[in-house]
Image 1 (cartoon, rainbow, N blue to C red):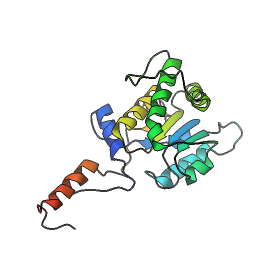
Image 2: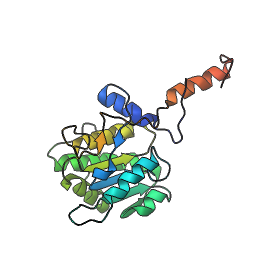
Image 3: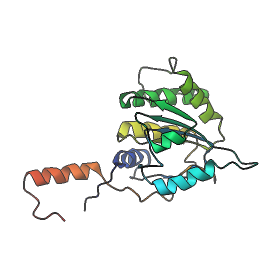
Image 4: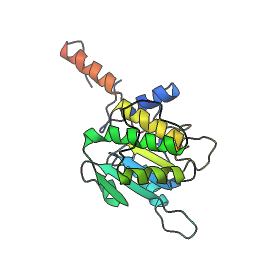
Length: 212
């Protein structure tokens, strides 16, 4: 049985497989977020679970006395529904997004007195002002209330984002207000790109008799 998702979330599941030892798709609890950064993730339009995420996003952005209002920074290459709702929208070529996440990880790690666990040749010294401000906002948010989303279908990129969210406490099971729930993962997109490629290879060599 081969499942196909459009857009694919296979890289996200594989990133958490490396992070946790088992493939898992996080359930994002946007209603708990005070600070949100989304990179190439149109979560109100096409990515992962738009209906569920729109409900959480609406709750997080509701203007109420005594309730924090979620600040949203959005990075994308094209115009999207989600980007149009953001407080700050940054237009960026997809080829620049991995380096941006690397630099963000450096800035967050430095603010927390550590360093990112991978080398990439930059320590954040040349970071754009908007990225420095975003890193500062993410770190200053109450632990567990900051969240980074990424829609890139690349395992390395998703592993970095998983590390970032862990550093920010987004997946801390001890926090009732956490923004990532790994105990009850999402079942929205369970497709595996490798299984699809294997199926295509089997079709090309005539090893499949029936395809339903």
